[in-house]
Length: 407
Image (cartoon, rainbow, N blue to C red; front, side, top):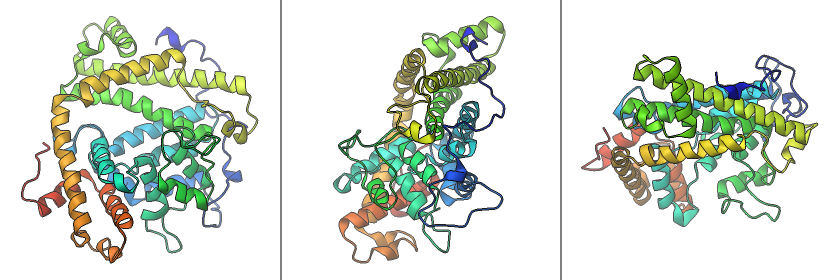
């Protein structure tokens, strides 16, 4: 292991009692619809279980991460990515003495709102929804768990605890400033509507657990997109040598194992990079905790900054890696060609359903008798966002004479 692991002694990776700054399930702010407590599970454990058993969770299996499912069955999907994020989030929460179950729940639900075909589908749907407030996958995740999942007799959605919903909405930081203005543009209407029912405190930072889930997302896809890029042949190990983060690890691997084949070298790079980034986050977060000295979860909300972050040096290296992946993988001509076809599919489907809601299946078309355009558009977006890649292609083939080849 590299010298950067020094200074981690005593932070602990095994079980330790929950810290004062952790979210306490016994003190949850509750659910929108009150329910009796479980005698066998905490509130956050129930949230995690409801998320795993939901329809939206199962659909992640056939939703794109980077590579379309039809391109091969070894690439990551939204589901496998989500599971990897949850594992890293739990590891971070454990080391920081936060609530592991809440960190896992936020990690498992964070991508529920993603459309088919990854960010390509989101961009296309956002463009089509521009006259009616646009489309945001984070807001769509909230819609999924508060409205669109219809499994329970007494309420729509999953009726998750306040802490899980707050973490879902704000895991990347506050959404509004002190004056109520959106910090990253207008706050999506779906979030504001729910916030009016149950105040999610959009101007404050989320708890430690949601912050663990957010940075775990970065760590996971930074490493695993390299892995998928190598597997696809669009990236090569030699292309990584100039990067400060991945290149330094690769040189270490080659020095230790000079005869190692490229496949194993890639996996060794990936696991060491994850370890290095996780340890950097733990070390940095512990330093922040020592500075802020929070005595409650409220102190975390009021800290005025994120606590679970990369160190400045790791942040610089991570940004360099992201820029590399954007230029060499996400914008690779091979990937862009597939994205063009996926973009066409989503736009065509939205236009067709909006023009004639009767084309949607039973259970969806009946709700739009004489609905105004805004309601109809959001309803179509809900239907489209819930689609898997496979179903979107199937629907396009049903409705159109020619469907782009995504293979």
